[in-house]
Image (tube, rainbow, N blue to C red; front, side):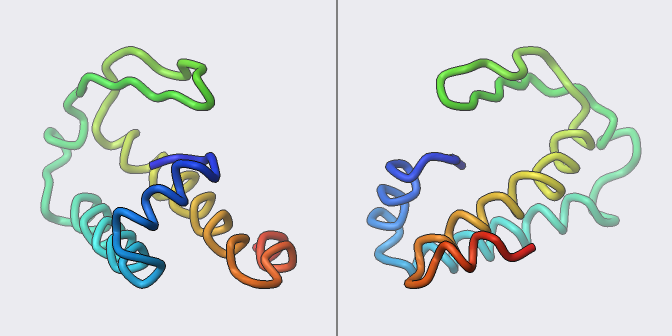
Length: 100
């Protein structure tokens, strides 16, 4: 996952184009939703996992954190943010990026 245009464009190419990237993101979102549902117990969701989160070469987190917090962060911040970035790559993207 990335917030920079270069990485997104590289992932589009690796996925075989925009349709491939959309499929990849859909599958990752499905997996994320499955983890947040009844698949994992509270004890499993509260298990600390090694975590290193980077943004533009800046370390944001470099310590264990509960799996639940990782999933919540991905669902609440990362997926919507990346969705806006992908929409911005479409023709007329500036208007799409401003949409909620």
